[in-house]
Amino acid sequence: MSLGETPDAGLLEAADPLLEHRVRLAACVLLSGADEISFSRFKEVLQQTDGNLGAQLRKLEDAGYVSLRKVFQERKPVTWYRLTGPGRQALGKYLQHLRRLVARAVV
Image (cartoon, rainbow, N blue to C red; front, side, top):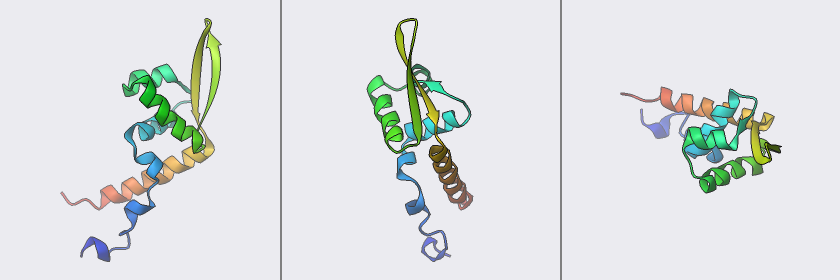
């Protein structure tokens, strides 16, 4: 049976394009297991530049997937990120798509 004949032929089109970027997906996965994560911790774990990481987190914020709060610790600004309810739902849905896609693999 070819892929075009299966009911999952549109599987990739149904995936959330915002979470297809590895940094955005990784940020959401990390946040799913934590209350909050600081920008500096994301930078350390994801090994991204300030500019790239900031741009990717901003896209998640603009979509309503993450929220942030800014505080001062020892007179230095610290930005904390949290996964929102819609972000958690989007991540769960995206992971379901990935599971279905991977289950179709023939190796």
